[in-house]
Image (cartoon, rainbow over all chains, first blue to last red; front, top):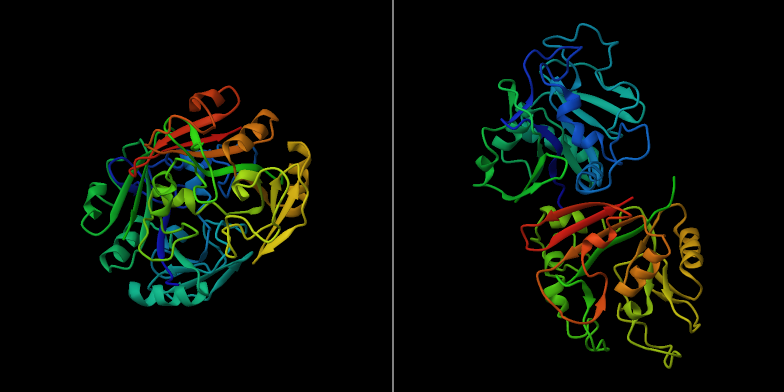
Length: 213
Length: 213
């Protein structure tokens, strides 16, 4: 069984941005409001960070509950781990994800700056350089036969798309315009030369784009 | 964690029938053509009976791949096991499902006529009477903390709906008219007094109806 590389629950604005400008420790999404961007997912029963019962179990929930299915590792860009650039000044700070991460698998953080692996609960972050194919090979090995999630951000997804490594994408387009930031695409149709593509409007207001090859 | 009772991938015609008239050993769906009714599911990568690679991995596949997720038992009407009515004349015949069933869990077959349990591969069929609440209690115990799938047919789904036991339903409405048979509903809106309801048209031509409470 081939191990797939999958983008899941990745949310962009109507103009294609995964995050706004000015990302910082206090504002991981920059000028974008993550509560607005991710509202469709946060309302579902299966949202990993949900603390109260009563979530929706319609279309959006079917997509959210697939987040961890048969996933054995995640690859993420450095910006998804934290806002630090350049050398790591403080090995104590453990990233944005706290001790109770939603990953529960090995996570491979792309960086040119080495640092030791970091374990938070049942998630171990490995800090790796190399080209996308090398990193995917490492993640596949760690995933032990299961698939690998490509967690973003937008620039990281683009790099792996350009390398031809992405097998499927679920991208939710939120009804909010950002104008500037970290861009995934100008229009979802850009990928139609390489992927099958279902467009699925949700009653919540987001439009789900499902790509596979 | 509550154990849910879930209808999944249940397909009806545009006029609400889950099967046609004249069900028999040769024609499990009566005058309905199961290849047409279930074409949307059979085309997906995750269809349990798929023997060839290359299935679709869009919207329909997200729904099909949820079929077994966290399911620990199935309840089905007698007609879904086989066309025999009344006393069981032949305990050798093992139902429509063969030795390689798609269930892989205990299955509870509703019948007034007792017969010993029957094991096919990793699926054991139990033949049980009693009212819907009793049967659900037995299935929950067998499911060991996981959810229970209510497998149909239409009459069985109606009985459990009328007993207020169904927590969620995924019903696919296929673009085919049957005119007569085993009916789930006159219109999907019938359930709107009791359930939240997402209507999700698929590019394949079926319309997915997702209900939860």
